[in-house]
Structure formats: C-alpha cells, structure tokens
Image 1 (tube, helix red, strand yellow):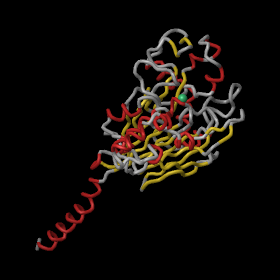
Image 2 (cartoon, protein in one colour; image 1 turned 45 degrees about the horizontal axis):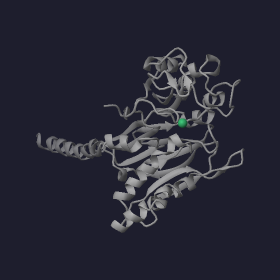
Image 3 (cartoon, protein in one colour; image 1 turned 120 degrees about the vertical axis):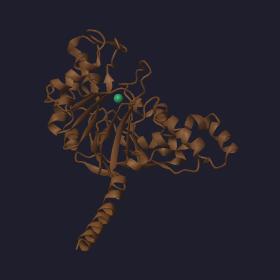
Image 4 (cartoon, helix red, strand yellow; image 1 turned 90 degrees about the vertical axis):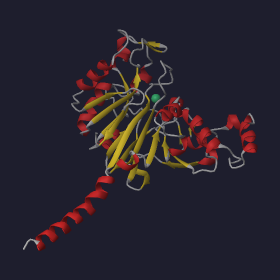
Amino acid sequence: MNKIPLTATALTLALVAMIAVPTAQAAPCLIVTLTGTQGGPQAFNGLAGPGTLVRYGDDGNNCGAVMLQFDAGRGTMMRLSQLGVGPSRLNAIFFTHMHNDHTEGFADLIQLRWSFYGTGPKIDAVCSSDIVSPLGFTVSCKKFIIHIADAFIQSGEIAERHSEVKDRTAGGPADLVNTITFEPKDEPQFVWSSGAVRVSAIRSSHMVGHVSYRVDTPAGSVVIGGDASNDVPAPPRASSTSDQVEKLAKGADIIVHSTIHPIMGPDKGSGMFPYAYYRQSTAADLGAMAKRAGAKYLMLTHLIPPIGADRQDPFKVPGGPLTEADYRKAAQDGGFTGIIIVGTDLVSVRLPAK
Ligand SMILES: [Zn+2]
C-alpha cells in the first residue's frame, strides 16, 4: 500500500536533489575590493593609488571566475598580490580617466604580466576614445597604452628580456593589451561583457574623457564613479555629484566613488585650488545621491584628505586630521541610511553578504 507513494517520494527527492545540488554549488557571488584609496597624486602613509577590483563567480571558485580592475594607481600590483590575484588573473582593466594617479600602476602591472606571461592571453583595456581638450591637446588612452613601456624599450630592458625568453613578445608589454575604446555618451552604453557579466559606461565630468562604469552580474551590481563631479563646474549648482552617474547608479547595489570632504572647500581656509575642489563630489552630496539612486552600499574612496592627515599637500586640513567618523557623518548628513564604507586599502564588500 505504501509502495507507490514511497517510490513517488523517492523520485521527487531525487529530482529535487538533481535540481538543488548544482544550484547550491553555483550560487553566484560578487566581491568589490578597493585596491587603493589615496585621493590625488599625493603620497600618504602607504596608501595605494586609486583602484577597485571587481570579482565575479560562484562559491566554487571564491567569486573568482571574472576579475576586472577599475583604474590602477600607485601600488595596485602590490595590493593585488595581497589578495592572491596575480597579474595574469585580470580579464580586463577599465580606466575612468587619464590622470596619472589613476593610471601609473598599469605600467607595473603590464610589465610584470609580459615578463612572466609573455605569450598571453591579452588583457582587455577599456577606456574613452581620443578626445581633444578645449585647451587644444589630445587626451589619448590609446597612446597611453601603446607607449606604456617606452622607457624600458629605450633603456634596452625589453630587448634584453626578450633575448632571454623569446616567448616574451618583441614589442614589449603593449603587445599584450587589447585596447577597446568607446565614445562617451550621456546615456549608459555597453562597453564590455563576459558571460553573465556586463559593463556599461557613461560620460561624466572631471577632466575631458572621464567616464563612470557599472558592472551588472547575477549576484548584484556595482557602479564605479571615478572622480566624477557635476557638469556645472562650480556653484551655484544643485549638487557636486554627476547627474549621469546618478542615472547609471539607479537601482545599483553598490556605489564606489571618489570623495572630497567639505572641510576642504575654498571658503574654509584650506588653500586648495577652487577648480580642484569643485571637480570632485563631496561626501555629503554622495550620500544624497546614493539615497536617490536606492543603493545599499556607498563605498567612499580616493579620500581628500586621507584619514589622519593634517595636510593634503600642499594644502592644509582646516581643523586638523579627519577621522573615519567624520566622513561617515558627512555621507549621513546627505541622507543616506544604507551601509557606508569609508574606504581603506583592501576593504571589500561581498554580495550576497556572508
Ligand atoms: Zn583622482
């Protein structure tokens, strides 16, 4: 009498197991890590230059199937080594803009990749297409990459290393980069994808060619604002944040954004150049933007001034060094009630949270 129901139950259980087991093994996850939080070209207390590592995968590969680096400031490779991420592991690097503090770590990273993984695979480098500044010169990510190892080509270093190991391409590190450029637009556009990971970009203001990115994955989404600020370069304006970044960030889980504390404002006596102050987003305005966008996490990075610094050289920090709580309060003053991460090198957010 029980035989048929038992068999049916067993079959059901087997089916559930077949469906449930692979699903459990393949639970998707996303880890966002700040590889450097220094704001601007200054050097302070061992902080690495700005950069964010986004890792996506599942529990089986510790969220490490796809690894994307956004900007590569000073010391990026050292920070990646602390995460156990070797130079060959990155699938792509994205540049928000060509300021040296966001790009100078790339030479180190790609030279290392060429030295030890000289046969490839290539790394994708994604950035804006060439653009002529109103001042007449051209900002070119493409040329930055083509010439990334010129000093070492000129010094004979590339020829020497190539003579030792012929697998290293004769042209040097630039041979290992697949450059993908796009024309920045005021609406999100897809610029890169791999499987379920899709990256889109939007134009934003800071310097010509500046863009912000959004990564969408089945485990969640993250926006990398870079140094974006409002298109209106100085007050009066509704906010110091970018309207385009806000559009890009709508419904995103995490916003990573460069930050300036309002204490550095030209009216507060820091002596900071007004143009340099106004081309960053303030912590308070970022809090307000994150709230409007509906984000769950706001990761403040590229902190100007750094926590604990009495100067953002050559400018002073009025009232003395800031604390983590000062930045947190500023973002909360903007109305954000989600989770605020005041960036330190190597801090991470994982989705789903463990
Ligand atoms: Zn910057």
